[in-house]
Image (cartoon, rainbow, N blue to C red; front, side, top):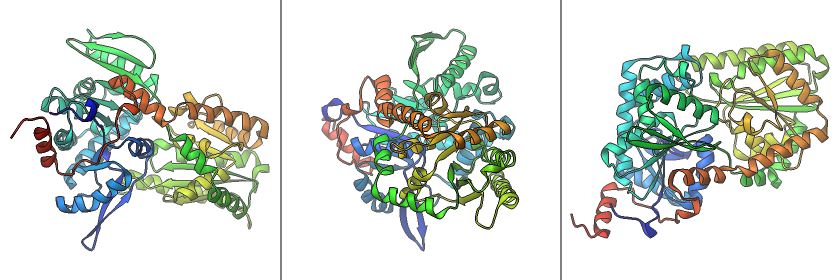
Length: 509
């Protein structure tokens, strides 16, 4: 394969989903922007430098290449980087995504072993779908490109790329927690998953705790393994192969969210929200519909707080945004029913003619509306039972400007380590702790609020998404983001790309 411009290569991100979702209505295709922590983190990076994003476009219908080019081409040009789709079937999604990814790895890595469904066909579908990703990546990548694979859905991809081309090097970032040894041992495919993780040049985790869990597993399954170094990145050697293991907290584009939170439309809308809700203070929760997010625990804690501190009634309102997720799975529908019942019970017990304790919405909000709600909120509450990082708490802090505000944050989020000096840390399993943390946040004076918020905002500003990417690249490739030159958009057609490579390298077909 041919070296790219200036021998620096390109930036190639791989994740389960593209930042856009393709849908067909009356045989007419369209693509809408997707949201999520990974998109929010990496979209500004790719917009800054260009490159590729490889992922599933969100549809299982057959799509012609001409349609893909017609739909994704203009969006790629608008965003400044190319979307490379991986087409998956309904069976792939059922076995690879809903099956192994979200009925095995997701619950196991979040310490919910009882929710795992260890079906062999799920593993087979997981491998089959990853082979499809590997085929697309291999069709577009060169040895000089930086291939960045993201998250638990694509753990096998690095080993598959090596099998296709030993000169390709890829790095991996796990966005969810990595479990302790005793939990990981319950996975029937534990040897395969651990081996696949060791095939990356760099395997990176959100926290040092997650990396310690991984290294402990490596020592058990590879007794001869040696570990060198200390700090954010260490070196691991197993027999004749070596790789790096890192820990780096993912973050947000702090400047963008800070500017957005202080913009005229957001400030104006935040004031309107304050006027619309009859309450002295507003508390906000923004969570994806998932059992790991601890939404029922939050509601039970709020209920307890209103019961124990009746003076807060009519003075504190919880605005809870529940973002839909995996609505086709029974346990997620049951979780939504549980949340609705708890909210109904709280509102039934404490509502007055002018005050509703819990205002909630099942759905997403436009960006301006969300950040206006962040800015309007006096308190943000995150009660995840286990979370790789949690970017909602960082978005809340960034949007507050110089205003005060209190962040109640679960001890079991990756962000708790970084924001420990400013947040009110809480054990979400302890309903009394949640209750008293809410009361403490409500009663906190403005001077303490501002001091705590300043500490958190500074921590997020220092280690923003560009810090995260730069340090990841330095560890994986000895480069920084600026070393990847801005690129013209590559072709959607892999065959044409290969022909151009051979021609430029002086290697005729």
